[in-house]
Image (cartoon, rainbow, N blue to C red; front, side):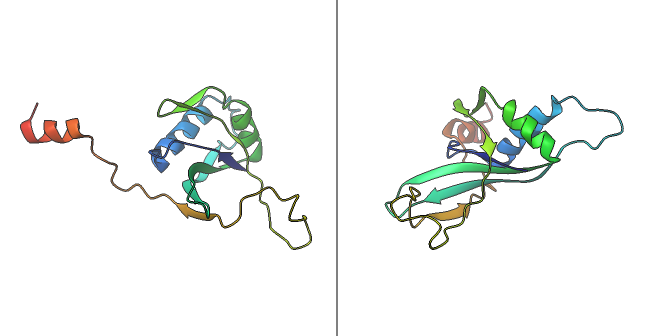
Length: 135
């Protein structure tokens, strides 16, 4: 099951998002001799529309599906970088001609979606000071 986590802070890394989801899945009751839930993939995505509006969202794939459903129902009061976040099931939507009228389709046009790659997180000024001066 794919899980969508809308409007995560822009400083969120893939590892932080995966850690949040993995921590919640660890709390799930596990029957002996059954397969443990696994995270198949986890990404932070940047959405940029034609007007320059930028948003960040998380997309996580979890198996089995019942673990994903459990995760969504227990994803209450979760925080990333002091911001409250929630989760819902990801829905794949296609823009097919004739499926919706132009007026009925409220989705933004010209959205560019890219994966955020955080290989080197930004170093805070105080961290660089401590490295230079050994405090």
